[in-house]
Amino acid sequence: MLSKESKPRKLVVYSKPGCCLCDGLKEKLHAAFSLSGPDPLHDVVLQVRDITSNPEWEKAYQYEIPVLAKVLSDGSEEILPRLSPRLGVELVHKKIAAAFKQ
Image (cartoon, rainbow, N blue to C red):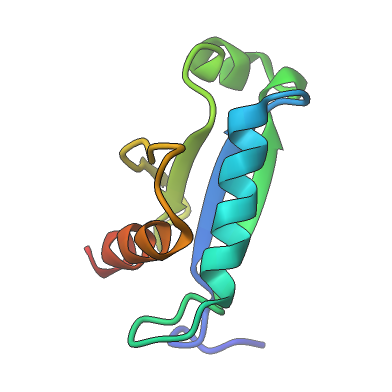
């Protein structure tokens, strides 16, 4: 079992099938997680949630996807600011690393 210190950090992407922006964000996140540097994100677990599988998610996010949320230590979620599809992998990495420091 993992100790509290080594608990993986978690992000959630609210998405749906056929969403090109969602697919692009997921690809950039996976690439950002594999970058090395001063703030590695190798331990981050990405959970993809299909909003069409849950009426509450669909109502909340149907016009907003992709929506990225950080899972907090108590299990609640904090919605992160939208990442521009134009951002490169390095900037995505920097923004995610900064979000986990807050």
